[in-house]
Image (cartoon, rainbow, N blue to C red; front, side, top):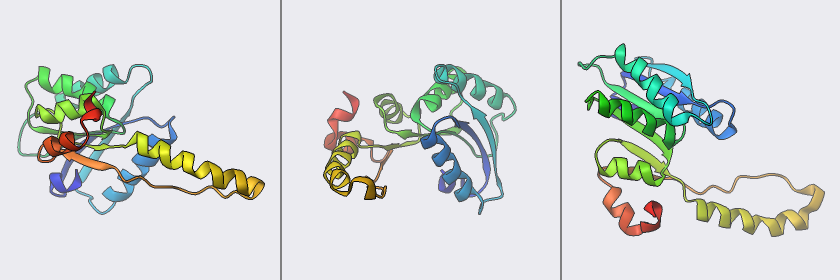
Length: 176
């Protein structure tokens, strides 16, 4: 997203601070943006339930103060669904000048990328994440009270308009 903005522009960040995963994603975004002072960020926290509606509502308000022009604009959701809500507002206003990003790679996000309404998402391979977690159970049980938490990383897969068709050939289950 930062690269797509070319180091300057504005972002509407749809956050959810109650959830640890979203807090971590927001903190990472903030860290990455520290070196890009020409990118301004407006943050709005969405509710659960209500994230689709909040994404649309916040996007409507933000778009009103960001008319089409020369400035690069992006909407980021700490997961796909608020960003998908924002896409509804973009489409109803005929706005094609705003890039949209999400995380998790759900079926709706992948279809929105395929249809040109979303810029990118990071697909999380939940099956492999679960598999890796279960593999740790033997070690956890063996270590007992001496167990030290550790991260078993399963890298996300970036999906864009350039990679979506290849991704779907490799992972047809992602949209089923």
